[in-house]
Image 1: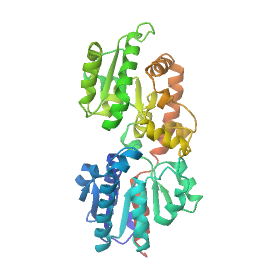
Image 2: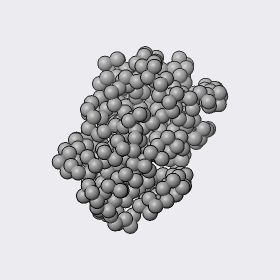
Image 3: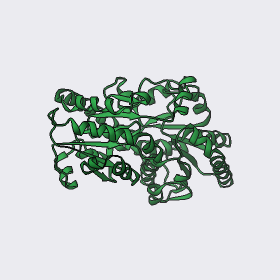
Image 4: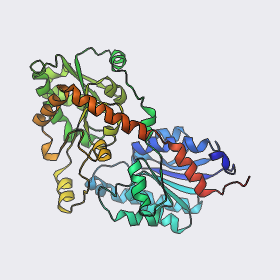
Length: 393
């Protein structure tokens, strides 16, 4: 327990590279503050980390870019930020540096800091098991402690003699085991026989890649709904981008009345019978809500063929639930398979098969329990053990 340690004030520099890292950083800051509320946190932060007390040198939005070529376009600016960050850290060395995800930025920084005898912690295991297997060596050279979100990562990394602590996933703690779909629909004032959530992505580039085909799929599903005994079907889109509404108004005005646009993805998922979502953390969010899903993703052809030509992707699956179970328990429609017809066909398969949905729910129950078995407090304890000696009692 944290109480075993000498109660002193520690100084942490903490860097998140995107909004998901901001959530994880907030959780970890709050867990460390249970040891001592006076611990000091500074670095690159988003709104949640700032609210938890992290003083921002830069905002997380300054690092958040998408895709290989998106990174290349912004690389000079990102490198300038990292140079300024390194200079500031070395001028006033912290007790530890904590890099959250964003491995191409943080691991290089952590390697330099470790050589200067500054303790380095990396949160979220880089997907070395999916691509760039040589990154294991970089992790060993850069990181004193790695905090991973999934249990299989802990055993894999320990096999490479990397100091690792499984901390569970914060989403597993924040999402209730049982979701009241009726209450969720009542809160949203939606009355329909079947509600399908469409989650095209959290970035404008993802909206541009996915939205039109998703609307075409929705039109097919709606047109065939009574033929397939699904009755009245409506759709809900959680997004902060008004462009999604404008695309639908302009391309399919008759379909517009079947859509609800909101900002809260949790409410949208809770109220839905089926979720069509882009790959990424959203697939885990949907799984923890015990909802059947169809996972989609399309990137630029340049990025896709770059990854294919150089054989950079090693994992069989794109969706986190499939990766965790090492089985395609939810369908994936990636790149050329991402078509309106394929989405329609997979949707009908889910909506027409209660036995398949029940089987999936049981799998997701097991996953939820395991991911909720640990928390950020385990990470906080491991960090304090790393940077402070145990008090002799």
